Length: 165
Ligand SMILES: [Zn+2]
Ligand SMILES: [Zn+2]
Image 1 (cartoon, rainbow, N blue to C red):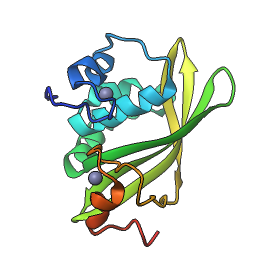
Image 2 (tube, rainbow, N blue to C red):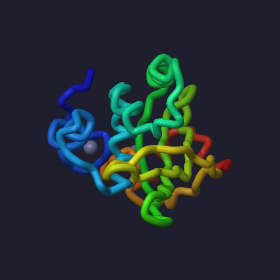
Image 3 (tube, rainbow, N blue to C red):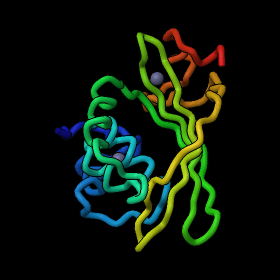
């Protein structure tokens, strides 16, 4: 399903084939938990359901995951990702604070989450996430969509739920 688009939706600046595709296909090992968040975000953009389930903690997998994921993927248009930071609690637990941006009924909406990941056998697994209130974006910061423009000159001009929250 994935296309060879440029750049990779995770904003690494690399091509998808040289970036998240290698991760999705299991050709490269990822020890950096933030990279897992980026690759999962790209998987949501490209419908790489296999990778999403593969990086889901075994205890969190449910029958019908693939169906509900594909339904969610089809109805969501992701437009940006901003990783705020990560925090390692101990050998097996890390948290990543990020915001994923999507278009919903013509408006920008945020999914701000603090995700918990478990490290098992040299691999990070998404365990669960705590939903956080939307963040306030600085007008002069680079826009989350990866355009390279300032937020005020880019997506701020689109009606959004950003200001209100
Ligand atoms: Zn990537
Ligand atoms: Zn933008």
